[in-house]
Structures are given as C-alpha cells and as structure tokens.
Length: 410
Image (cartoon, rainbow, N blue to C red; front, side):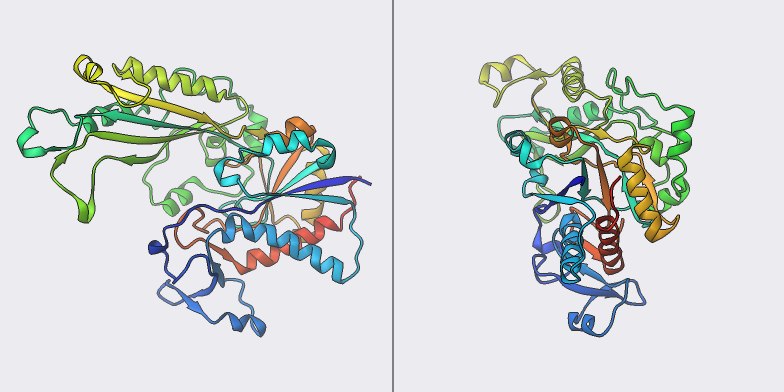
C-alpha cells in the first residue's frame, strides 16, 4: 500500500490588533456581508441550524493555514467516525515555523528520513486560483530576503537649519531603487531572468487556466501590469523583486520636519527553479556598489562618514527553494482523477504559485513529488488585517480531503 505524507502549516503571521475589525483577531468570529458590502459579526450559534456558504470566519491565520489543516483533520475524524478504512497509509507533519522560513525543517527531515519516508507529498497550504475554483498547484517559488540601510547624517537633523547642507538619504535611496526596474516593470539586474524559456506547449498549458488579465487588473485596482510574461500565469514563471517595506523617519500624526539619519529598505525576491538566489542577491549587491555606495558591516565609523558620500549596509538571507512537479506525473494524474470525481471539470491546475513553501527538504531528501491542495478563497486577506475563510471553501476543502483519502493510489 502506498504512503502519503501530508504537510500542515500551523503557525501564522504577527498581527496588529488595532487594525482588525473585531475585538481580538485571535478569537474567531463569524461574519456576514450586508447590502452595503460591509462584513458584520453575527452569532455563531446560527451555524447549529443554518448554513450560508458565503459566511466567513475572521481570525488570525484562518486561511493561512489553519483552515486547510482543519479540513484534513475534519475529514479524518469523519472517516474514523464512519469506520471507513483509508485508501493508503498516511503520515502528517506539522510545521510551526513556516512564517519564519522553517529554519528547523531541513535538519528535522534529514534526521527523521525513515520516519517521514513516503511515496508522495500533499501540501495542505495555499490559496485557490482567482476564480475560487478548487485548485491544485504543482510548484511554488522560492524566496530570498535582504535588508538595505542607507545612512545619512549621524543623527536626525532639523530640516530648516540643515536643509541645504546635510543631504537627505531618502533621495539617493529613491534613485537607487528606481533603477532596479525599467519603465515596463522588468527587473534590470544583470541575468535576472536567465535560463527561463517557456515553450509554446507550456504557454498553452499555462493559459488554459480560466482568467482574464483585464479582469485581474480591475480587481487589483491597477491601470497596467508589469511586462513580465504576457499573462498572469506566465508572469508567475519568472522571479520577482519586491520592496516589501520602507522606513525613514516618521509619518502621520508623528510627522516632524527632519532630515532622517537612515533609510531602511526590506526586499524580497521570489525565485523559480531556474533561479540561483545567491547569484541574484550578489547581483543586487553589485548594483548597489556600482551606484556609488560604499558598503559597511554595521554603523559607519567617523572616518567612513568623512570619506564616503554614499554609505550603506546590505545583508541577505536565502529562504526556501523553488520546486515544480510535472502535471502529467503519477501524483498529478491521481489527484486530477480525484478532483474530477468530486468537481467534474470545475477545478484548476496551476503550474506554480507566486508564493513560497518550504518543500525543498522533502523533495530533495525524501526524493518525492509534491502537489499543493488549495482550499481558501483568494480574497482572504492573508498576512493582513481581517484575514478570513469562506465557509463554502472550508466545506469543499473537507469534501476534497474525503475524496483524496478514499481514492486508492495505483
């Protein structure tokens, strides 16, 4: 009998409780949308007698990824109550460090290789396609992150007294960052897209996914898309560079008239299997140095401040690696058969997701293929205030898990 290893993410992102539209994001609430489109808390006792698939549970990590984990656990409980024997052996690993980059996972997999050994890996994590159709995803991008600090004067300075004397580091930082992409949104780093070639067959497969770029732009509230790939699915096959955070002095109610002493830039790169994260980060480092910055290890010394007009520090970290499983592989055919049994043709196969998952330790150490079974609704606000899970998706997630657990693997 075959053995399947299920991966469950259990942890969640930090939250700012003041930004949530409920008393406590750690205490789930049931909400329904009113005629004006506002989500309002409703009595969860209604679930004992009523069910509306469009009601939603709002809570920290409801979608990412406690909802998918509970879909599998609920399915297992149902089969146990009904005394239904599983169609294959299962093993489950729960990751409590996924949002930290799963630092302990590679060692845990290596040291417990025999215990975790399986024929394939099913990943209970990730959001569905934009259509909200049940989704299988056959790959994920990797990730690398960096912190850039650009140094200005030793201390914040009064902008009136020193405005024409002390350079503001924000301006040099803005020019540096602006040169990282061209006017079409393509990353300018040397070799950033090297090695990525999509055949016409692959493009046809990618673009079988039911989506429309104009509709996506309207949904996102943007006038144009970056010119990386002709479609959304094609764009996901390339690495990306993102400014994920930017800090310099104060804004809002705390704003003050100063020249900041430093600018902090947080960067992430999403990587594909053809990408070398270390090479791309070193290319970014070279870009910063070629722009005239002298890089220091920590706080600049007085001598460095006197000598170099452009000072910065740059550190990066490599996270999870990208992976990709062939859709025509045995694991792909098995899951497609299962999905058709439940949903007919109303489901989506995606070659990869834009996000990252720490699956490399399983794929490289255990030498097994992996596919992600997607359950949460795409408009779920993951990693943001008011994260939520649609009840209809949760129910379909349980149904999906029941179908998978009841389908023998050839």
